[in-house]
Length: 396
Image (cartoon, rainbow, N blue to C red; front, side):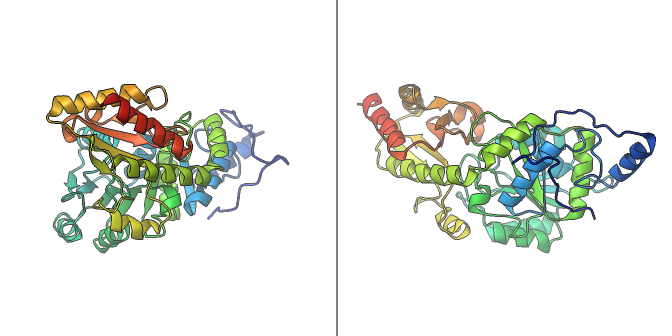
């Protein structure tokens, strides 16, 4: 088992950007030895060969992620979706016809990947677990696990966009009781709020594009775990499919992750302030935020996150006598705040951004007045005032 810590070759405070596509191997004997060792998929190779395999700049950033998430290993990929593909694909085995179970309340891109890739192209038997009234019923989940006996179960700690908080410890225990693998997307909660690996998760994925990077200028993904065998499988899959982040993006991500905890703490604070403001408006029919005691996940989130915060996303809906009025109010609000809060189809940026839900998800979330607000780390009073003025001026 090759688990030595990577050592920087120069006395810099950080590993520089190694843009080498291939690395010098000097002679035939060293080349033979390097490629023989590569068959073992060591996390830190004796000799670097090719940047699609491993790269010292990327390894440095992966070490930072390991510290953040408390894992024995971490692998960076070029996007959150490539991290999900890597994490799931290593469990697909020829001849294994057991179903995979996915919670229904997950990111839309993941759902599209499930439909188009896992089902249509790979022929995997995909089953879904549905919440009841914005909560996951553990008895029903146990019954579904018993009936299906899936090999893999996938869920999000905080769901997108309805912010349902999963009873992660109970869910993982049930998954393992039926000898299945637990793969968890922790993008919304982040390691600041909870470490699913400590709860027993097998693999945790992050869209590092979001809060780990946190500035809206990097696309990256990460998958993390503790099991060395899973690491070797994931290394092999990433290498052969080319799911590798660039050294330049890894370097920038590594510098941005140094401020992760400071940023996310502020974003959670801002989200609570905005959610508290929105519930006071007669123009808002619903506010979905697990930090509000009226949210169905409040008690679950309080216990799981231990008062560290409740995430940095607030989803809310405009009231109206009919759908047309709801859309009009939604659109008027978006226009009113557009100078300060832009419509950008992502989340986790340094500044607050928003996204209307219906145009993206359609019939899945048909409420035309719904908006997903991603809080940045501006001053909370500033964002509150922008939203308060928009509600006041747009709907007098």
